[in-house]
Image 1 (spheres, rainbow, N blue to C red):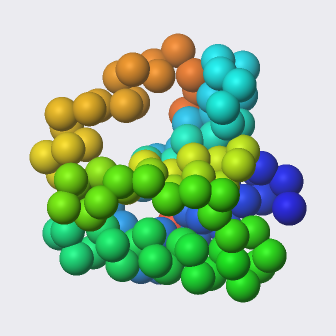
Image 2: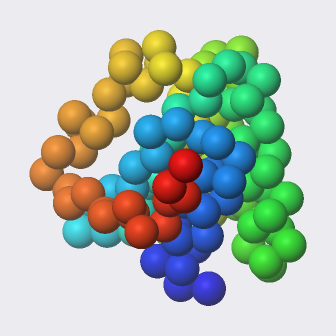
Length: 119
């Protein structure tokens, strides 16, 4: 699976599990650590863990298990590393505090609107 295909699948999985404010940033030209960052908000610490678990399960079923999962859900931030795609799952407070989108403003945002359900 290419990094772009992984990013698409990850966004769909997060959307189906009701993650909030899902966004994707193309960082390949800005860093060597990944091609994409996917950022989303969990409504609670319980949902944060559920989102990370769902990504691990669903992507594993597709033959793309995470390379590493870091952060405890009690911290309000969990990072799920899929190699070329790094997923940042935050509580609302932690997302606002770290504001990764602001830190990566020079990297282009990916239009994912067609991937999200229209509830």
